[in-house]
Every structure is written in C-alpha cells, then in structure tokens.
Amino acid sequence: MPQFELPTSPWMDEELEMLADSCRQFYARECAPHYEQWEADGAVSRDMWLKAGEMGLLGAEVPEEYDGLGGSFAHDAVIAYQGNLAGIDGWGGGLHNSIVIPYVIHYGSEEQKRAILPRMVSGELIGAIAMTEPGAGSDLQGIRTTAVMDGNRYLINGSKTFITNGAMANMVIVAAKTDPQAGARGISLFLIETDGLDGFRRGQNLDKLGMKSNDTSELFFEDVRVPASALLGQEEGCGFAQMMEQLPQERLLIGVYAVARIERAIRETLAYVTERQAFGKTIAEFQNTQFVLAECATEATVAKTFLDACITEHLEGRLTTERASMAKYWLTDLQARIIDRCLQLFGGYGVMAEYPIERMYRDNRIERIYAGTNEIMKIVIARGLLRD
Ligand SMILES: Cc1cc2nc3c(=O)[nH]c(=O)nc-3n(C[C@H](O)[C@H](O)[C@H](O)COP(=O)(O)OP(=O)(O)OC[C@H]3O[C@@H](n4cnc5c(N)ncnc54)[C@H](O)[C@@H]3O)c2cc1C
Image (cartoon, rainbow, N blue to C red; front, side):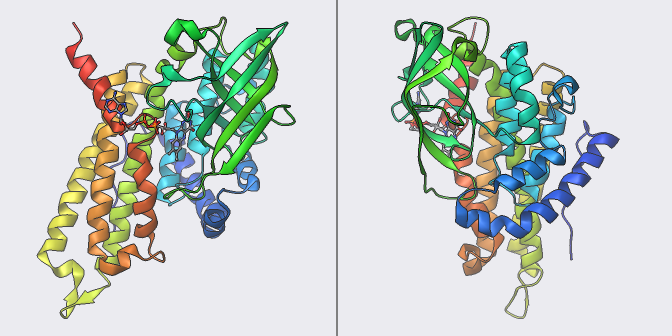
C-alpha cells in the first residue's frame, strides 16, 4: 500500500523520536481499542488519564522537582501530534499539558506548584481552563464572573460554558473579575480544585458536532469560597495579561493538531483510493484523484514547514503572537479544505460513520472556532501590521 509521511521536524532529536515511538504504541494499545466507546460515552475514561500519567505523557513541561519530565513544548508537540495522527482527537491531554499546566508553571506560587503539579503529572488532577461565558467568548473583557474578597477568602459567582474537559476536570483555572470597573485590568485567574467544593456545579456534558469523546461542559459557581492563595500571580488584575502571554502556545498547539490531522486524512485517502474501483480501475488511477492528492500533499508539506518554523521560534522564545495567530488560522483553514477534498474522493462512503474520514470531517469543524476564532486571529495579525 502507498505510504504518505510528512518530513521529519528539524527540532526533533533522538529522545523526542523515542517519545514519538512510545506515544504511537500507547495510542494503539490503550486508546484505539476503546475510542468508539469513549465517543459513545462523551468522554475518555479516567483510567486512560492515569495510564497516560504513568507513561509520562502528562506534564512533560513540568520541571523534574515537581515530578515532571523537565521537557519543553517540543515534548508536548510530539505527544499531541502522535495522538492526532492516530485519530485520538478527542482526548483533552493537549489542553491539560500545553495550556493549563503552563499557567501553573509560569505564574503559580511555590505552594501552588508543589500542591498541584505532581498530581497533574500523574493524572490524578485533570485540568481545564474556564474563560468563556454565555455572554462573552471572543470578547473576554466582557466576562461577568466575579471574585470578591471576603475576609481571607474569595467569593466566586458566575457561570462558564463550552469548557473542554469540563465534565471530568478537577483542577480548573477560572477567569473572574476582581474589579468590574477596571476593564481588562480587572480580570484575575484562580486555580481551583473542584473535588468536594461547595457551590460548584457542572452542567450537562454538551452535545456537539464532532469531538464526541471530548467532554465539554458548563460550570457554575454559586458563592464558591476559595482561599486567597488560589489567586494566580502576585496580585489581582493580572489575568488578562497572563492569558495574552499564554495564548500563543495554545494557538500553536491547535496548529499541531491541524497538521497531524491533515497527514492522517491524506494517509486514509490514499489507502481508500488505491482499493476502491470504478469504471474498471482504481479511483487512484483517475487523473483528478492524482491531482487532488498531489495538491493536498504539497500544501501539507508547506504547512508542516511553517508549523516547524513556528515551533522552533517558540522553543527559542521568539514566537510572536501574530505568527502564532497565523499558524492557528491558516493551518486550521487548510485542515478543513484538505479533509473536505479527501472526503470527496471517498464518494458516498465518505459520509458513512464506518469510514474514518467521516469523523475527521466532523471533528475538524471546531478548530476554526476555539482558542480564538480565525476572524479574531486575522484581527490580531492585522493589528500587528498596522502597529507604528
Ligand atoms: C468544543 C468547544 C470547546 C471549547 N473549549 C473552551 C475551553 O476549554 N475554555 C474556554 O474558556 N472556552 C472554550 N471554548 C470557547 C471558545 O473559545 C469560544 O467559542 C470562541 O472563543 C468564540 O466565542 P463565542 O462562541 O462566544 O463566539 P462569538 O464571540 O459570539 O463570535 C461569533 C462570531 O462573531 C465573530 N466575531 C466576534 N468578534 C468579532 C470581531 N471583533 N470582528 C469580527 N468578527 C467577530 C466570531 O469570529 C464568530 O464568527 C470552546 C468552544 C467550543 C465550541
């Protein structure tokens, strides 16, 4: 059977190759056989999180003193890439590893790091980040959840929606207004452990298009009391700036997902078109099929090259917010176009659930929306262009 493989990333080394290999084995052994069940359940199993922890697939960026690997985003990129290449798109490990944990590493107090990081590395704590509210998605400054000092505690009230890992997470970063009059400077982030927390409630696991095995929930906070030490950072009002600093890595992660899924879509399509026959030949023998695949493979190669350049910049601490936004917007747009073109080559079977391209088509749709919509990405890029 013909093979398709995108070029190896220049930032890979022997250790990362070994990690990629363990990931491939882990996803094939521990995830693929259960994936249909997780899709039906609306979440991956807690047991899978614990096994991922045992395998070293959680908290690779966490320093060794807090039980992590002491690695970098390169480790997380390998773990996320291999998961998406294997079709394990619904596992929220990428968000846990590359989005939630870095907030604790960068802004957490020593006490928070010691209390939280080892348990995020083992999978005992599952991370989520709760920014979005029913009335505030793209416009995060409009959030209405409040955190008010009450003695030596904060009293948190408000509701969040569309929270990834929301049904299972027990370690949630919550964005709240500590000073509702101060705009962006009035937003603070809180590290909140939710097990047994009075006043905290989850809504339904939301039914959505695609990514069925990724739990997405509403979260409600009614007079939730947390200690003053739950504040992330030295002082109130730093939350918006912290989110802006961390968003480039979040956007890059979505770019990693996109390229891995493109590679998978082309692989699945090659396998199909070389088997399926029409008019006495395989679908692969039609010139149209060959041209479509040639175009997709070329665009995929360009995409991986750009992604690798952005990852290298990020590892060297020079990825700008504009470049990260370009990666998120362009790679997810390309992912949608390529998966759509690949599905067309499956004919009617492309929309049948028994073929992987059907799920890829559904799973891919959200990528242009979350982590900042692609329209917001263009606003960020344009702002950079027009800056004096
Ligand atoms: C499955 C899923 C998982 C998610 N996970 C999380 C999570 O873990 N944590 C979290 O906090 N959030 C999460 N989100 C929320 C996600 O980040 C938001 O849905 C997204 O930011 C868009 O916000 P919105 O849905 O309120 O859309 P809106 O902000 O209402 O936007 C609607 C439309 O208007 C456009 N628009 C808005 N403002 C402008 C503008 N200024 N100029 C031009 N166009 C504009 C948008 O691009 C979009 O097309 C998730 C969402 C989904 C669906």
